[in-house]
Image (tube, rainbow, N blue to C red; front, top):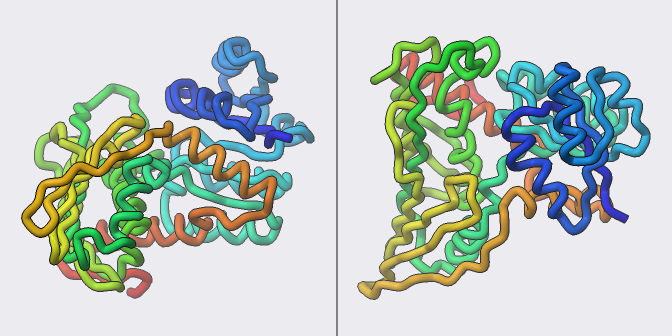
Length: 330
């Protein structure tokens, strides 16, 4: 039996990515949507032939819904996740997990107390190029990873009324919006990040959140990564991995489309690595649905989403103080 899903928030992400992914997933079924804007919820529900709600309590009272995708702005995530967990439903929450690590801790605790699964929607770790890159790293194709360079940028000039530029709604700028994606992917590929040093600035746009972040990340396993994350320029959105035997260039993993490629030079020889592609959102939905139906461990627990928030906060702290910051320490 497929896991029955509801989507909370009927914005562009839910419409263009999440709802289609649930419909395409082999083990999931979209049965309901909820948005405080009744007209928006109704239009969405009509197009996907599902039930509509404009009241959260009524939505959560729907006993058929087993899992909820939170597709609302970050300032709503914590309160909504707590209510969903208290209703006994599993949670896949859009990134960033919350406005801060304090809220993330509440989300983790409530999900544990209610014995429901909580995962953050870091779909880039489900990208086919990410999964292939992880295999190549584990096979030591380029030896020990010394430095990674993650470039993830999007030219994002001011837009009147957009919640992304209000830190009370978004929690921050480019780092909170999609830099956290790169941090998660680096963690997935290279392990725990233990220390950061960063510059956080407004280089081009004068809105209340940052438009540029450049950070150095240190891994527990050894080695480093450079994060280049901007609202102030269009980027290549590629991941470079440099090892003692060669290097890899991964295109596509730091993005939302299923396409990409992996190329490299290993011991002086150029190589291309074949990848079998699958939509990362579909892969994410199928994974979480399997976690629910079979009781398997998720690729990431809520605690890993919490640590992602702690790394983001450490980068902000380093940018403010000019000092290196260890994760989880004052």
